[in-house]
Amino acid sequence: MCSRACGFPASQPSICRRWCRSTHRNGKRISAKELDVMASQRRIIVGISGASGAAIGVNLLKAMRGLDGVESHLIVSASGMLTATQELGIKRSELEALADVVHNVRDIGAAVASGSFVTEGMVVAPCSMKTLASVANGFSDNLLTRAADVVLKERRRLVLVARETPLNLAHLRNMLHATEMGAIVMPPVPAFYSHPTSIEDVVNHTVGRILDLFQIEHGTLVSRWSGLAHDFAR
Image (cartoon, rainbow, N blue to C red; front, top):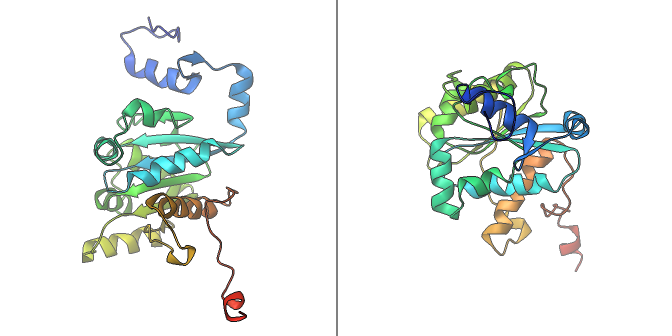
């Protein structure tokens, strides 16, 4: 029997893991009151795939943790975890601890695989060209791409932080297909008008703009453009 006392026998590990992840946090059972609060929050799915730029997904999760009324659901692909470890030196346990709910990328029966599980939408940050191709062509071969497919079919917001350069024709066509289906393709292009002084500044500006697309207030992540009038008035 599971040590968390979910009630499922060890012979049903997939059901046990799914139940524990939806009813436990940090190894402790979530109370009925906490579950009611979670149900009233705005759910955002965060997918991290294998492209370079894992810091975008990590900083997005960190930003969402500090926001009231927002619940993050994390899906990390195998290559996404590999890239995050190489770029940031982060362990899987440390990454998963940043999210409210974690789903195994192989768990095609997870809640986010169904349109009846209501969410605000999904962000894939970073989005590899393989993941983009899967989304653009409806190839739902894992939970990350299935969740994205669900978001599209339910007409919810899907933001793909496509991370590749230069781009070939297949990349461009897949971006077009995804956009025609309702996705927003958002390459993490630096905003130099904000005069960033560190990589963290550049990453956080992108994170803030992602949250803008979901109309989520986030404070000072983005240096807002206010025009050039004050510069010419000097």
